[in-house]
Every structure is written in C-alpha cells, then in structure tokens.
Amino acid sequence: MRTRKALIVAAAAAAIVGLSAAPAVAQDTGDTTTTFDVDAGTLDITVPATADLGNGDAGTTITGQLGAVTVDDTRAAADASWEAEVEATDFETDDGGDASEIVTPGNIDYWSGAATATTGNGTFTPGQANAGAALPLSDVTPITAFTHAGGTGNNSASWNPTLEVNVPLANVAGTYTGTVTHSVA
Image (cartoon, one colour):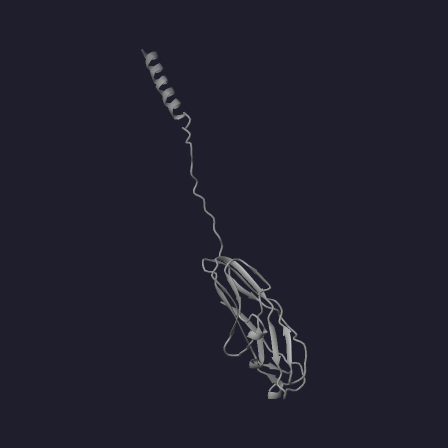
C-alpha cells in the first residue's frame, strides 16, 4: 500500500511538472509598440564677418555685395515660417564725429535679390527681388530681407544682398566702417 501511495504521489508530481513545462501556444500575429523622436533644433542666421564694398568718389554710388547670408531652420515645426530683417549703423571714418565723415544708413540702399539656394518646402520670398525694389537701411526700423511662409519641418535659404552706398558730395576721403545686422525670427 505504501508503494502504491508513493507511485500515485510520484505520478501526480510528474503530471504537474509536465503541465508546467508544456510549450506556449504560438500566436499568428504580434504587435510591438515602437517609438522614436524627431528632435527640434533652432532658427539661426549666418552672415559674413566682413565685407568690402569697394571704392568711389564723393557724390557717387558705391555698389557691392555683402556675401552669403543664410537662414537655417532646424525647428522641425508644423508651421516653419520665419522672417529675416536687416538694419545698419552709421558708417564713419576713423576720425568720425564730423558730418562729412559719416554716411547714415538712410544713404545705403539694400536689396536681397533672389535666393541663391533653398531647401525644404513652403514659399521663399526675397524682401527686394531686384535693384528697382531696393530700400534704404535704417538704424531704427529694420527692413525685411527675406521670408519663408508655410511649409513644415526643416528648411534653409541663402542670398547674397547688394548694398548701394549713396556717398554724399560733402563727404571726405577715408575708409568708412559700419555694421549691417541681419536677424531672424
């Protein structure tokens, strides 16, 4: 009898182990929830560190290009619109101070011209498409240099603006230095 009980207990234990070791039943499909992130960057503008527009006589117009200005929008936004503006300081000789040694921003016309390169979608629009649309710079109120409207995700635009310096007839000879400031928002 004892042997029979031992056999029954052993058989029950084997059955339990056998049930727990049975392979899982396979499914025909399986879902894995998967994620990733698209990073939001910044809205930046890059401009030349220096520019030499050339030379000319008092009472003439000195025309030259500033160099490549680039807006790089890596915000990955649903509305990737932005506006770049430009303004300037007075241009003065090293002696400075005297009106004959200053060219004010109002005597300097700016035109962006068409984009030299763009990436992304949306509408890229120059502030001044050609010389006929040139506007005088200001030290108080910025003018629009370039815009991007609509579009989504990342984009960029580059242009090479032209400056037309209308040198007053009364200005003296010398090297005039000032600052042209581009900003983007």
